Image (cartoon, rainbow, N blue to C red; front, side, top):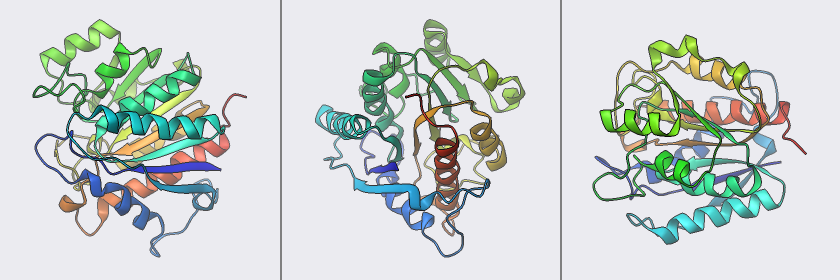
Length: 268
């Protein structure tokens, strides 16, 4: 079984609140009668998701207790030998998640799909901002390599951060330069839904035109060599969504990620 956890946290967001409502919206889409429970490879995945509900967080800006609660929840699942898919919430949840994976994997590769690099040293005085999770994770040694795809808003500061840490950063127009065969070891996938073009994922707080298509993201998931040990899907803001369109995209990604986990079993 794959553990499914929600983290209804958006206090570390900038610009708009709303992603705390994301886990419930993706769950509703997963069980919508408009689709079924199979992946594109005909793997019945929804029934293999052990939905453990939401992590209890206070949803307070810059809260270390909230971050610690997320890490502890992931620790529990990894100790039980589970793969974990986490539903956000804003992207700040990824640092405490990766903190947990670091305890189990000393050779983790992180593949990050996003419009933004999320490498700020801090944003607006908040080191736990949703714009900073990968800066914190790199500082903490949570991964051996970070590959970012779909980036189209990198500031000079974030370019400097990427150079400092040896991050591979590819824009949407550079996607053909991504070679999954170069990835090694266990893989963690982090998908910010604003990495997709807003024409296919309008339900996000930060619309950034020029993004990836749904098919491009699905092809990335299919191409990951595995084992895929964990993943998150974050930054759905249902208050901005149109006819649950982005929630359905999020649910589709969860199903295909789960299928990849099933088909490419983790080491050990």
